Amino acid sequence: MERPKIMRGEKISLAIILKEDKDKWFLWINDRNIQSFLNDGARIHLREEFDEIYEMSKKNKQKMVDFAIVDNTNGELIGFVGLQGINWVSRHAMVWYVIAKEHWGKGYASEALSLLCKFAFENMNLNKLWARVYEPNKASQRVLEKNGFKFVGRLRKHVYLPEFGYVDELHYDLLREDNKGGVGFSFSGCWL
Ligand SMILES: CC(C)(COP(=O)(O)OP(=O)(O)OC[C@H]1O[C@@H](n2cnc3c(N)ncnc32)[C@H](O)[C@@H]1OP(=O)(O)O)[C@@H](O)C(=O)NCCC(=O)NCCS
Image (cartoon, rainbow, N blue to C red; front, side, top):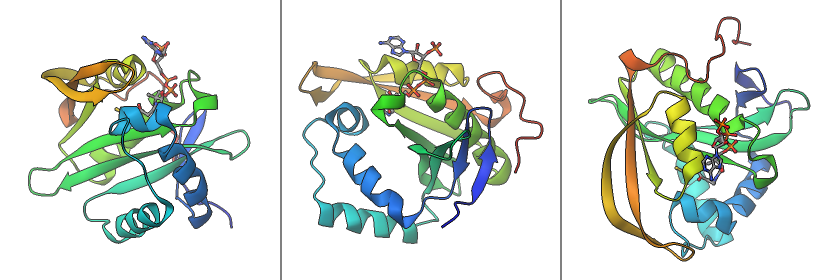
């Protein structure tokens, strides 16, 4: 099935998640390199539980929005990015993102977050985005900072990660009026 693209950046696009993406998502979400920094190192997702969460997320579109991240050169699925806990009264949501390990360090997450921010502020008319990130996750902090997110607070020794022990949880946010378009490329003409 052809995958509808929603927003196009320089290297990657945000696109609709297809049913067949579930298998890759299931593998990545159980990859300790990814899971430890998303939730904690102890979380294990059984296939049945994962399928339930997946189906629930498809039905819960009022509270969350998810996109596939695809490579512009060959259409390969390289990650996921999304909003969770959308609050339509206070107009804020939490951002999250995952890139397959073999594609780390190519600027994909930074660009995907930049497109997601544009979608959230312009299409969804949200007022604030926020993120939580564990202290050792320097790459994720850099992705947020490159997109104009500001560090706003710290929960000390909040999470236990097997490789690091107890670590701080850092909170970042980005107000709509401070969104300058992220990693420094022009958005004009990025719509498909
Ligand atoms: C965090 C994650 C999404 C980053 O994806 P990515 O596509 O590699 O990110 P980018 O290439 O866009 O940017 C990474 C930035 O972090 C920097 N970086 C990477 N490791 C770093 C480290 N140990 N210390 C400091 N900076 C680091 C890179 O140099 C780059 O910055 P630059 O562009 O200024 O050079 C990816 O590592 C991932 O999926 N991790 C597991 C899931 C996760 O942590 N999600 C976020 C939860 S808050």
